[in-house]
Image 1 (tube, rainbow, N blue to C red):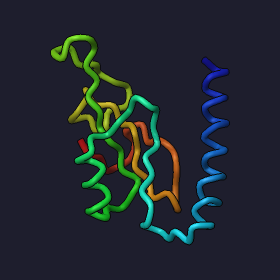
Image 2: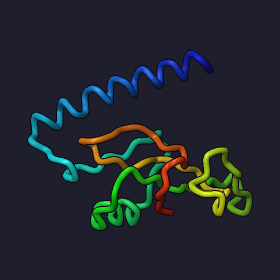
Image 3: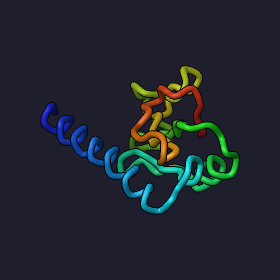
Image 4: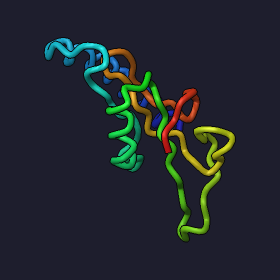
Length: 114
């Protein structure tokens, strides 16, 4: 596990370095680009993506995913819910202003969408 975590952290560090460099070449300014950080199976609902982009909310914002285990009636209680009120959510992926910040919130951001 430690090796995987180290590789993941190393990869995220490279992303944190490259995104601002790439965006500076495009002339992107604060608020122009919303980036979503998470694993490939952490897919926000298109409605949540539109809501975050169109509302111009202050970022970062966590996205609450529901995690059924096998049967839909068997939800998984995660270690990283978006809020204590929603213990069966997983606080990833996280929406960021790509010019300002990057990474995953794991339900620690004050704001979230479901």
